[in-house]
Amino acid sequence: MTTTYAGATAAPAPARRYLRQLGIDTQYVLLGFPLGLITLVLFITGFAVGIGTAIIWIGLPILVGTLLMSRGFAVVERARIGPVLNRQVTHPVYRSSRTSGFWRRSVAPLADGQAWLDMVHGIFRFIPSTLGFVFVITWWAVAIGGLTYPLWDWSLPHPPANNELPELLGFQDNAGTRILFYLIIGAFFAATLYPVVRAAALLEAAFGYSLLNGVDRLRREVAEANEARDVAQQQRAAAVSAEAVALRKLERDIHDGPQQRLVRLAMDLGRAEQQFTTDPDAARATVAEALSQTRETLDELRALSRGIAPPILVDRGLRAALTALAGRCTVPVDLDAPPLERLDPAIESTAYFVVAEALTNVAKHSHASEVQISVQRDATGLLVTVADDGVGGASLAKGHGLAGLDDRVRAAGGVLSVISADGEGTRLTAALPI
Image (cartoon, rainbow, N blue to C red):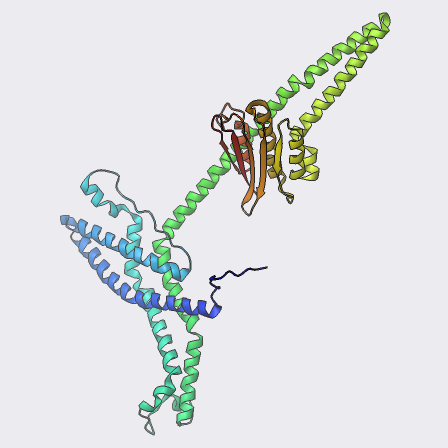
């Protein structure tokens, strides 16, 4: 259901958009023709005089001035191109001298490739400007003249043998036929006015955009590709680091827990074997204790397996897994997690471990009395927040407990932030892409 608010502006009708674009394209082409004449004369003159007098050093300031002038016209042209192409046209970064010398700073535009492209555009823009101007003027003049012909036909002389266009095409020589003929011509040019004017404007604008922004766009694309490559390398390094941290933690947990219990279990069973012949009652007590050790070892192994791949997360999704985590936490948890559709397994696993690690740290170090967990999903990604009212002091720096969690989040393409001032609790936020 769509709600309309008072004072809201409705979207323009297609006819209104066409008329607006027709006006923009028309003024762009009509104004481009005199600008093309001006830049042609100024830039050719400045370039010719500058090159011709460069041998006596007078030409260098003239060339620099011409390039700076071309830069100014280029700024104006980029502002004019934007509405025609219906896009935001960015301004490139011009090269400047980093030295402190006056002369080196003055001649720096001579080494700027974009400044030379601006001058080339100013010289050669006359070609598409002239073509576009001819077509636009012709179509507008014939369309207006043909449609308004009945208003001024009476003012024209019509001698019996004047070889008018209707007669040459075989039409009868009378006022009604003549007016109808010119009305048809005007209607045809009016019907084709928008595509012709649009094509002329796009031709001139595309020529200007390729010279005034082509190199800058290529530089930006290369920079974005390099940035994407760096991000991919960082994610790969973070994934390797997170995997190494998880393996070390698992190895330490197995060594400190199940491995020690299994060693004790083997010793108890060996002692029970020796006791069966001499003291059966003591042997039965030892076996009972070994059974208890076996159950505790199985419980620890199940807990470790949940840390690797929690079954409830795989079977029932993120919300159910977080509910189970909140139920096992020793600190009261306020969970705000609305029902979610199933996400990518890597994203669900990362979100789960963010909450699990945060709750573990809260239980061990924060001395908090309450924890608030919030999970929100929007069009851009998944936002997981864990906040407590403990002592604070948490950090993402290397050597702290959250460093490995930061690697895990970055490996999934997300961002982890921690706000944890001393005495003011900790707020951990993970933004994950979906």
